[in-house]
Image 1 (cartoon, rainbow, N blue to C red):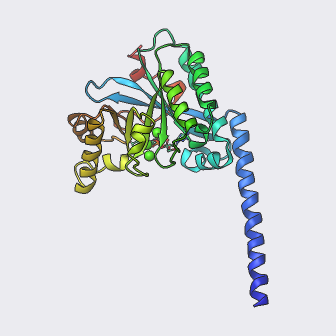
Image 2: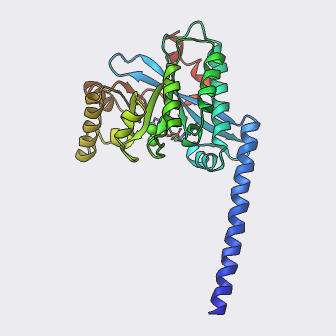
Image 3: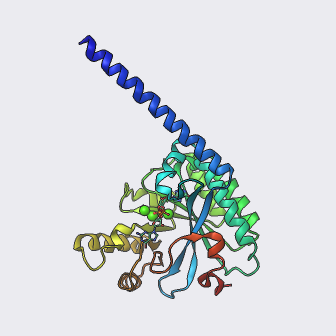
Length: 279
Ligand code: C2E
Ligand code: CA
Ligand code: CA
Ligand code: CA
């Protein structure tokens, strides 16, 4: 038994050190990436179902790594969240997008929706309200509608603070969107508590239009919930014309997906015909 204990302690020791080194490394790497401007804002259009017009864009983070090339957010957002770096990361995205849009400030279409993915960590104080105000000033356009996408995967507690936070965001004319609806905690009380303005329907449901009956029933039910609650809806991951037509017929408000455009760097987005023709 002594040998087993000894062996187990050695393993625990090695694992702990490996863990600390790698997490510390990840922290350091990500922190310098943020500082050196290697985290880039990409943008994907949102389209009004009924008219096919551009309603706005969602900002998605990309890491341009000098050694490893383009890194997708699934591999670094979690580290950013666990280390608290997510706030700085989001702030650099706000800044890049605001300064890029500011060049078009007096020509932007009215009520352009600009969506950011906001982590729970960022909702723990009123800092987010300050960040949003700063964004609106830097973007130099008074009609922009900020969209704050919060995910269902990380429940945000209803407290006096968070209630105040969402109230102040609404006072800035921002909209609150509940992301990943249907795959997370599907907490319908959220819709009321934070006065959610729209639901983003996860692409796993959209991808099954025309094939999988169960997913399609779930999709139809989610759309019905939004209509019954009188909130807007956005379908993600639209890849085919068949999906686009189905969602339009069902009355989904916005659509987003490769069928329209994949996410591209924000500087390319503002040059893209889809954006240029709205100016
Ligand atoms: P999400 O917010 O659900 O974003 C949608 C994801 O679907 C994006 O992946 C987008 O590139 C991808 N996508 C869009 N259209 C299609 C399509 O037609 N087909 C398919 N298969 N995929 C499509 P991405 O950019 O890799 O982001 C993954 C997730 O990382 C995001 O999911 C979001 O939860 C998170 N994320 C990205 N940027 C940020 C950020 O700045 N802050 C935070 N907190 N999270 C972020
Ligand atoms: Ca999102
Ligand atoms: Ca989503
Ligand atoms: Ca998703």
